[in-house]
Image 1 (cartoon, rainbow over the protein chains, first blue to last red):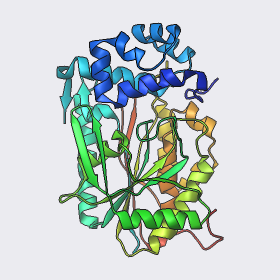
Image 2 (tube, rainbow over the protein chains, first blue to last red):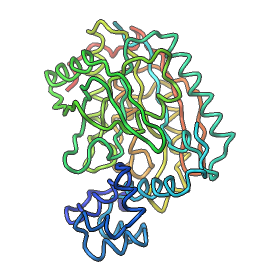
Image 3 (cartoon, rainbow over the protein chains, first blue to last red):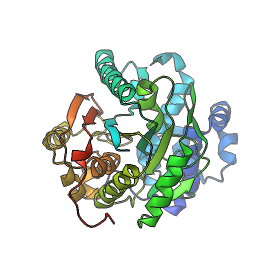
Image 4 (cartoon, chains in turn blue, purple):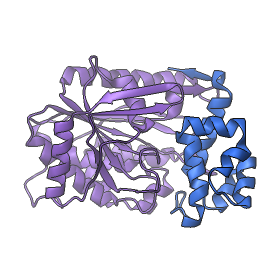
Length: 90
Length: 275
């Protein structure tokens, strides 16, 4: 069986950077939620990466070299930002 | 001073921010174990808490990926959702760990400005004594292959214990992470609870040194890449029997809170210095 967490190929650096910013940069997350196309323009993403991000399809993103943890936490951050009332905060 | 207490805690984000997919009673049982850790930390009166954590690609992105690093800033800040936090850092101890670690052959990276990941914050949110105790964040690369080997993590833990034993501060050790979980993968809903239980039984028997013989591939297969942080701690506490304060596997995460008695007897038998 192949590993769950693998070395991110250099070709996927812009894609992983986008996922990292969604996860870790609240200002970028806000820009992405308001206008994803303009936010993606900032990062030099190719058409395939942009389409996979638009659909936020995990397996397509991973196939393009996205790191699985970044996909997971970027998705959770988008969910937290879109529906903050869906969580109980301790 | 000797290390005064040693614990391992999960940092599962759903324990801090609970979506309705999570069993509330289970979450509260883990919180009760955190409360016991807080009581023990308070009673141990540490001057510093050395927190060994994985980074979740937060402080360190792909620009630079250290295998092992020490945070040597004045304070450490971060954010997770609505939580914005700043924790004091014990700079003299952090610097001593860095310098003595390098002197012992561990090529540690260091930083004076990193966003502190929730891996460090979540357990401290629930366990930090009042008033807050300064921390020393120690980073172990757990998610970005190639990670440090379990043997190297264990050796670093042994060296860390020797470094701390030569310091004047009372130090609490906390490993953050684990147990089995597979975020972002098709196995997310199937944590390897049986693997976790076998490992906990070995730790309860005082056989923590066996973790140094695990391979990176075994940790990845078991959903336990974060166990590297525990392995550093196990190198520091030596062959003592662990006390499992809770093991609460959710549908996606083996939440374990574990404590180790630490005293002079837990120091490793005499031997060559750790390399």
